[in-house]
Length: 263
Ligand code: ADP
Ligand code: MG
Image (cartoon, rainbow, N blue to C red; front, side):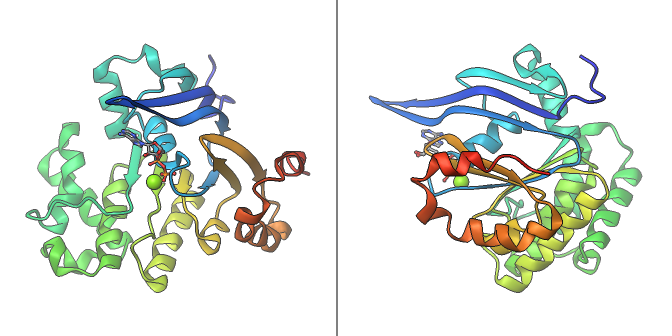
């Protein structure tokens, strides 16, 4: 397939079932979703509705139980384990709610780590990592270890780690969930800059203040996409309201799905 116009992400009837002991959990029931290059998509929905599972599948950390997932026009089931690892390492950046930094490595070493699987010279690695840390305003903390930093600073380092490899796709799972609002704002500002510089972003957030930075909002409920809507900039304010009242508007699905059309 010519990838020129193809969406980066194409999920078609994706289902994910976790089987543990006697319990089957349908984390995703029937998700169909396309994300084009350069989009900034926010994903919202109540706890347990499948948001993290969706990101894990998109990021090749989990496989769908059924349905088709094409990444850059290629069904991911065709990828070898080596190709999956390569794509995860080179094309996708992850930011998790809990930072996931390695405690006994310095800030610089944490950011360098994913680059070390890429056959870069140590010098090149160091330069890239330092540059990413400067970009998030953490260059002056390069020699600290994570425990010496505030939550907001740790998340900035995690953002640096995610972007040091210049991923084409950035996946963020409640990246501000553990941050005070000031740190949250600055992490969001970073994501916005990345988006402006061309990255495709999928971000899970339940916070309408942060979701408003996205260009499209996807709402999940019980493992299904119940609504997806694009922003025209003048509709931004309105969408903050829509997200804010999402819980109350849940049952009115027919009304929500009528709202797909856009200018
Ligand atoms: P969210 O991120 O929206 O809170 P998740 O995607 O984490 O939701 O989880 C969706 C559902 O799948 C939940 O019921 C959760 O308990 C279940 N689930 C997620 N991961 C696993 C797993 N590894 N094993 C079993 N069940 C899981
Ligand atoms: Mg989650």
